[in-house]
Amino acid sequence: MAKTFFIKSFLSWYRRLIRHSKYRWLVLLGTLAYVATPIDLIPSFIPVIGWLDDGLVVTLALTEVTQMLLERRRREADLTNPKPKASSMDSAKEDATTTAASTIDVDAVAM
Image (tube, rainbow, N blue to C red):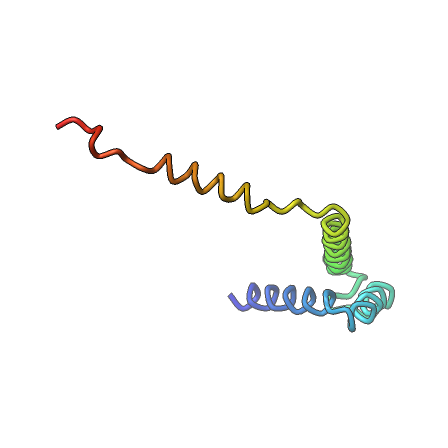
């Protein structure tokens, strides 16, 4: 229970910091320093587990950077190719069609 809370809070904290433009480069440099230096939460001389934390931190950083780049690309694509707005004539036609389709002629209904 406490482990999942710690992991979720760490992930949300990391994502929030890396998406903040003021701290982005600091977080990325900190991530690189964590991977490059021998100071780790789990020492790297432990065969598998020691390398696992470095791999997870690098994977998290690459995932967040990729997501930010994809979001930026989508925003730029939306800005260069805006969707055409429906004219007032089109919306009036759609309203008339919807109204006509949902209207029931009471006199036409047989009793």
